[in-house]
Amino acid sequence: MDDTAFFTRDGASFVPQEPARGWWRQDSLHGRALVGLMGAQIADRHGSPDMVPARFTIDMFRLAAFAPARIDTHIIRAGPRMALVEATMVVQGDAVARATMQFLRPADAPPGRVWAPEPWDAPDPDSLPPLPDGRQPRHFEIRSIAGHLGAVAPKRLWLRETCALIADEPLGPYARAALAADFVSAFVHAGDAGIRYINSDVTLQLHRLPKGAWIGFEATGHEASCGIAVGHCRLHDRDGAIGFITCTALANERRR
Image (cartoon, rainbow, N blue to C red):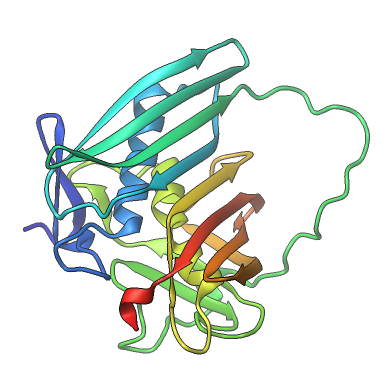
């Protein structure tokens, strides 16, 4: 198997490689690989240079087996200012996830001022030390700014992919963002007892594509009751803010 890519192509199918193997179950795909593949495929098939993939929402309603996946897409609307595409991932004959992507055409900004959070003052990722040996996650790199994954405190970090999405294919800017998106659940829902929630969806909202390899994550909210959690974070690159990620999660009772 290829240890440098999440998938290889086999005709219309995407064959998972070792980096795509799930954390919850060894015979499954993990969320980063699944979300990244679906987002990148919709953007590659239906995007264009004059449209921004502004909103990508994916519902993961069945555990995806560690087996070749097929992604079916169809256009719901293709208008002059907005396009909407729906996609389904099929593994071993079963639909495992459904997604929609909204493309918007850039235009001149309207007049007036709108409140927005202050730009973050994060140090450049190259000025920060790597995590110690044994603490770096699989198949991506983290440079910590504030807090840590399970900290009950504000958290900020830089994340960089170290693995190709599809073997022998370049990792484009939207693929980087889509691959990183599923990390939001662990980032905002982890606490001092570890990662106790498993997310059922991800929504990635961008007003522009990221520049460069590093994407900055800033935890901006977690709320939960009755075992259901919602959370969100703000995204950055070296030039500034680029958007948000939100997710919904359920307490993972099977781990107890």
